[in-house]
Structure formats: structure tokens, C-alpha cells
Image (cartoon, rainbow, N blue to C red; front, side, top):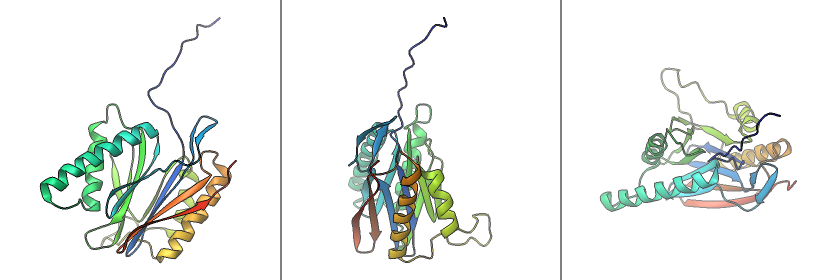
Length: 223
């Protein structure tokens, strides 16, 4: 009989999906609230969205223990920045900080897949999408997590951005108004929850615009 060996991994994947859409004067960031391991649901009420600054929000899927450690690290670095500069970080600055923080741990990475959304210095919506080791790109919309393979083609069909290789460079923000973007997010999550067992229960939608940050919720299927 073949010798069996116990395998232990420092990582887990707690599933879930995140989406962000940038508009002319807003950004919509959404994630479901289910946290799973294997075929077990650990909780149906877990928020994957973290406010990093007044106009900058991060949604993360992957290993939620690593996500919590990453959020604490970013909060500490942002506090130091505020004491030194007497102002909050802009969204593009936070995007670079997140990239540096992930890349610094590239040999034992934070197993988290992040989308960062908010408003830039001109008040326009911006979305940044990441891999686990800090490679990032500014895009008009993005999806991460266990349902991203279902959600991304849907968003591509509805919102296809111009190629970043086109010259002159074209704006990546989506043409939708805020209410249309929120409706689209609700539709993609309702669709993903039908096929992905790790996406479900409820979606938390965070809208960032000139007036501030507001949250909305919508129930999803619970099986």
C-alpha cells in the first residue's frame, strides 16, 4: 500500500466574488457576503469590502485571513501618510501602495485577489485590478474571485473597454449612469450565484461619488 502523507497548506480559498465599475463621476464596488471553505459555508454575513480612505474602497476575495492582515497593513501605512502629509491618500496613490505591499510579500504572498475603486483627483471614477503579487492595471471595470470567470464575459459584453494599446489613449470609464451600473452589478451577481456555489446569500454594493459613500444590499439565493 502506498504511504500516505499528511499535507498541510498555510492557505485556504474562502471563495466569493467582487466587481467594480467606474463611471464619469462615480464608482460602484460590490461583493457577495458568503464565506466558505470546501463545501461548508462558514458565514452568510461576511463583508469583503473595506473602506481605505474617504474616496477609496477595496473589495477582496481569496483567503480572508490574509485579506484581514493586508487591510491592517494598509490602514497602518495610511495613518502614517496622514500624519506626515496632513491629508488622505488619493485613490491612485492607494493603488500604488497596495501594489507595493503585495509585491513586498511576493515570496510568501497574501493570497488575496483585490479590486480597488474610488474617485481620482479630478472626481472621475477609477478601478484598479490586481493579482496576488501586486501586478495591477487601471481599468473601467473588473471582477475577481470564484465567480469572475462567469462575471467578466458578461461585463465584457455590456461594457467593452477600448484597448489600452490604442493611440491616442482613450478613457476607460464606462458610459453608464450610476443607477444603470448598480442594476448591472445586481444582474451579474444574480447570474453568477446560479452557477457558482461560492457566490450567494447577499450582495453588498458600495457607491462612491462626490457626496460620499453609501451602501446598498440585495438578497441572493441561499443554497
